[in-house]
Length: 55
Figure (cartoon, one colour):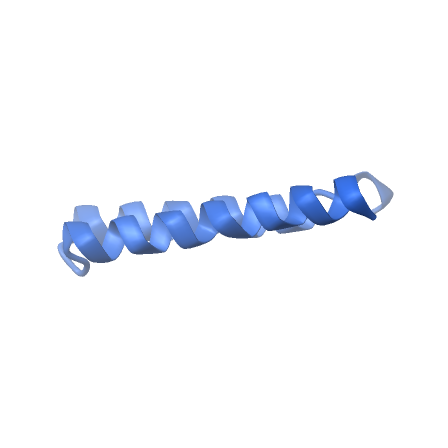
């Protein structure tokens, strides 16, 4: 599991993006809801990168 070190947050962010796209494709989410979910997931990845760089 050492190869996952520092990458788990990015996998979660990618899963959030995939879930938002799946919800949009399936009609469960509107475009605005999907964009909000995608931006939230991207924000999570950006926050993780900032903490890693600053810490």
